Amino acid sequence: MLTYLLCLVLFCVGLYAILRKRNIIKIIIGVVICEYAVNLFLIVFGYRANGRSPIYSQDQKIIDMVDPLPQACAMTSIVMGLAITALLVAIAIRIYEKYSTFDITKIRKLKG
Image 1 (cartoon, helix red, strand yellow):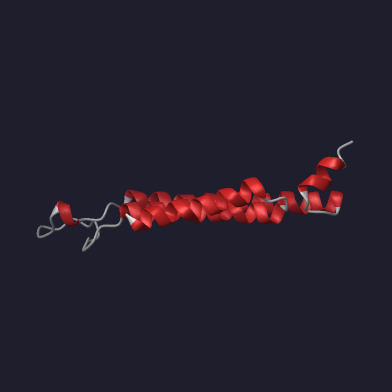
Image 2 (image 1 turned 90 degrees about the vertical axis):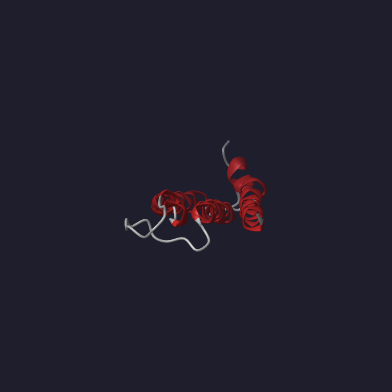
């Protein structure tokens, strides 16, 4: 139960960075922290104490097997998170080239 709570705390830290920070780089770091929290939750959700790999054998019981679906979802989430992070960094670089700042409030003032 404690690990689920720690995943929630980590997600809330990332959400705080997304909502309250004014620097685009800090917002991107908040998005990455939220992604890591979700990945950690998926791995913790699929964990089973003394679990075995889900390879079929006559002596294994279904109760002792680890569910491979959360692990597959976490792997997919890691790949998608990498693509999202690359896209956000590319957008941040373009914003910096155009406005010469990462501060959101200054960018909003330049809108005119």
